[in-house]
Length: 150
Image (cartoon, rainbow, N blue to C red):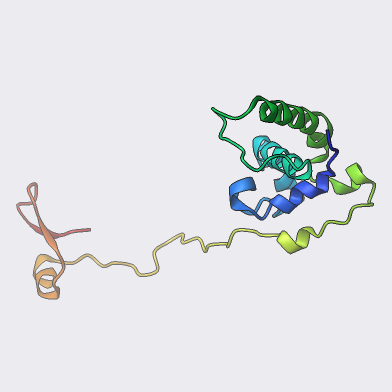
């Protein structure tokens, strides 16, 4: 089995189909929010690519046994060797030798303004004024008259 550096997995992170949306937005997100299966599938694809495996790869229900064995070996290697290094803590895992530019991929959701109270306070409208202003009305059975729809 070919050994693959863990940081090579991050090359797949910009692919939405491989890792999801903005997988490298932060070390915490990479380590805790990106699904393990996504990283493992990308590792298996990378392994097949670097091993020069045949390109005619079938889907899961009809692939060749050789492909199955290769995928299982890659999955086991990933889980034992690379998954513990895929927690986003580069300094602890690589002793500061690997410099990854997290700022290049950083992202945070746009902040929205909280509206504690409505911007415009609505005054109660009587039926005559509402009808003249073109406000939609509905008949209130309890009151026995038309009232504006709120």
